[in-house]
Image 1 (cartoon, chains in turn blue, yellow):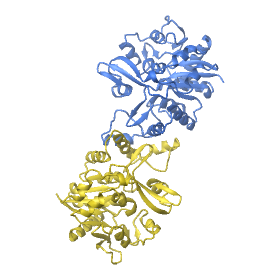
Image 2 (image 1 turned 90 degrees about the vertical axis):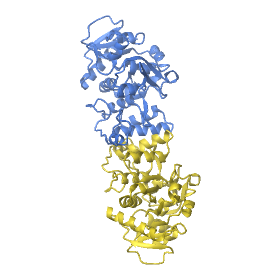
Image 3 (image 1 turned 45 degrees about the vertical axis):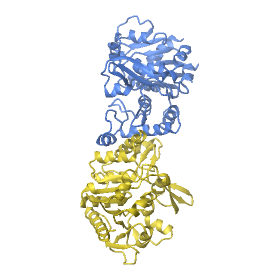
Image 4 (image 1 turned 180 degrees about the vertical axis):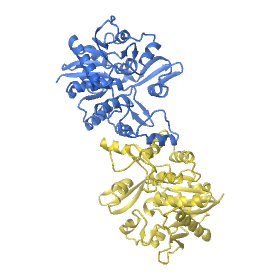
Length: 310
Length: 310
């Protein structure tokens, strides 16, 4: 069966993956998911991006909130606050079940890969959700006030500190999770997409796992990124803010430059000016409000890949 | 300040302790609590009897249910079931906060004693709640089908298997928690009460911790037990069933015999026949439906202790 592989972070990337599974046979879609956001909180192993993929693909994502589970309740957090526990990272009562089971599974010797497959199977997810690695990789944001662990930066400090650099602790020792290199290199893989996730915080950690860049370079399938830039800004999150802090224009050109040598094409928003990106490109409306948008963006990215080949 | 010490299990014992703190200055009441029921579930350290004491003394106990927290919700359990997690032991969303924080505290090197004091202080509990030990002690029930860990026997199997014996794994190596021996031996201690908890499952684990029996024998304060037998049966739980399985009559005499050499007096239910118990005794209505009942039983037990002295 023809296969499409997507490198993805959480919310934005999950929208593209949802578009793909509504466009293609879901079993042919493989998501390779950032785990640089993973962290231990209250002794629990939290994998935000993997969970966003799982919740999105089984229809349990909280659409109104933009993260976490649908039909969520917050009694645990209320009781935690009453006990003086940390309130900055919100764990819903239902979401907790996933973290508690995962923590127990990992403590019993299971891998993050194996646990993720078990949940995907339980929830009837036909697509393949692969954590980028079973080994710990921790995204850290360097700031004038010192290094901040990802969730401290992203959630507690709401991306407010000025970033002076980004590091992926543990990445040099990490191995790709089972299936990652195989999916990228599979001769049946029709296209490898890079989701419109944050390039610095969500995609770079995946690319920092030794072996993944080389596999992308050696792949027979074309690699196409979807730009997160819309109308000179990023749709959400700190992408544009980081670009400015790193002295780069907030533009598709910066995205193309960031992925130079890695991608064969870039899908950009239809409203972007036509400038030389230094790489093949196509345009569509890349904002993904509803499922039709998601399917359209997925179709456009695949169309560009099919046109380019390798 | 004059002090009263209570050896106690969960629900029934907590009622007596609540009576005491409503009869006396709460700061003078010390509960030494069974931890033989403690276990790890889903990777979390659960201390059912300590928690029942904490919830009861701060007014957060679920009175209708008879265990757990008031105002509880069950979203976590619903999501856990959906994921195929174990459903036999129910963890409420609010209750979970205590288990998660305790597990994290213990993993960080805190003792159960220290964590319990922190929660008691946070919740404004003036009485002292002491786990019997910081060291692991696991009550195990021997049955024809093999040994059952306490919660498996009590919750999962609803005390249905016939018990052929009870063991307290780890007890021989356990040390009394800070304050336990001191409270028992304190010259200001007016009385040491044994709550109407299950003698085999809730009080014996406390007595199995080396040093506690000797401290009771050496104490200057009288030791008075409150019999859990009412009208030839136990108020709740498997006390009477265990007595039958161990070939002992379900009677105050069996209770007096069980604690022989340890207690100076036994408070029995007013409706019990007057037989020779082999130990000094007093009668009252020992059923504790409401707070007035609890205060009355506490007053009667203290009255018997005061009368006996040592």
